[in-house]
Length: 448
Ligand code: ASP
Image (cartoon, rainbow, N blue to C red):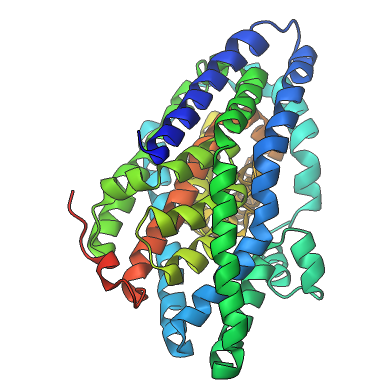
């Protein structure tokens, strides 16, 4: 059996084993909610130690080296501008499409009508206070502030401290600037570029090794996640809401993005999805675009047929900026919560969701649960629009986010898959604009 297939089978086995172990050995065996959290904690800690930490420690060196070499290999700065511009158009276009899809599904299916808010209120308020309230209070208050903090992330006063804080965006911006400078310096800079090229090859090897830790890591992390929430949380009053989110994510993953890839990337989309299966499995189990980033870069390059130029900086930028799954999820979740509380929204207010959910997804960091926190920005914006129309209109309190916290862990895993697949498809499309010189065939239409 090919090593690649063996690894996929082992990761899948870790995933299924983790679900079963989490449900039967942790969730079903625990006596109380507190005992559950205590029983799941060692699995979470061990999973982070053997899989998520090794991935996270690779993020900064890999992003730095891969973006610099990606930019130097594009060479001409005006070509870089073209690829950069096209990447941004792709990110924004697919994110908007994801929000529109989410709004359509939630408006047609109406998952919130018929759910009794009184039955959920007490636990929702407690969950909100203990898990999200603090982050919302210390996070950006509005969309303007979210963008100021994004801009501040891009221009840190100290690049080493930014790197030490795992601020990927700052590293990307610095690496692009350095890459352009090295290209302009020409011959004098060639030794530095050669060293970085060699380092990139070595770092990719390390990512390959870390992937062999994935089966055990996935088992432990998934066992902890399922152990805390239990599979039973997926049925009940939130069942239709979950179906709407997962259905929307699947339509975007299997219909919308494949159509975009076929049209602009001239690539067989389903074959491509199969080629990037380890990215999908890693994103699903870690629920973090940033932790998955080393795997994304390595897989796009080695399995996904993306050019070195595109496989490096498109995923690096996309891990923080491009989040189709988060955008779709926020649209469905916010509409759902307004429906539960019987507050009807006009087309204008849905447009407010369209704009703010797009921006909130762009501003959300690629870490677990980030979408739940930036959702407060969307709710606040809709509330302001309701108040502007009628000062005494009913508004949605932020604690209502607590209603969906219980199922958020699972939905986080699902939306992170779409976030990361969006980056990979972007890299594949940009490979046409910026192919590798030595392998001009790599962007041709791949047979099924
Ligand atoms: N966990 C997601 C990610 O890392 C972000 C989110 O919470 O929506 O991509």
